[in-house]
Image (cartoon, rainbow, N blue to C red; front, side, top):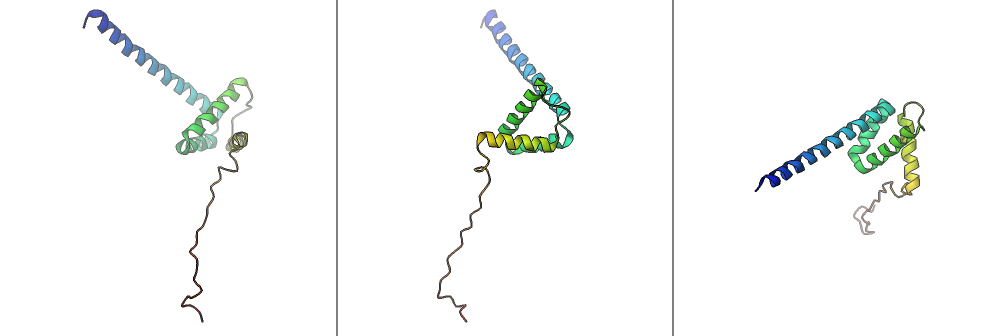
Length: 118
């Protein structure tokens, strides 16, 4: 291994470290913006959504950040407003009726020749 290969390997690891630092900084900026825009109950609700469905949480965060950056938000977003936003997103994707879980009960058939006839 010559000196240029060693320098190239060090440059590659330094580049990945810079990218990781940049991503961490962007993540911190995102969290700070959401903490500023959302009230406590809405932040808790969003964190619970992230536990169940991380991709849905990212979509909601992106919408809220876009709204905040474009000046569409007046004041902090409450939990009720967050729920309204969730409903609007579900209606837009068309998953509102199909996303509700359906419980189906399968009962065993009863014979007419039961011993319980009186």
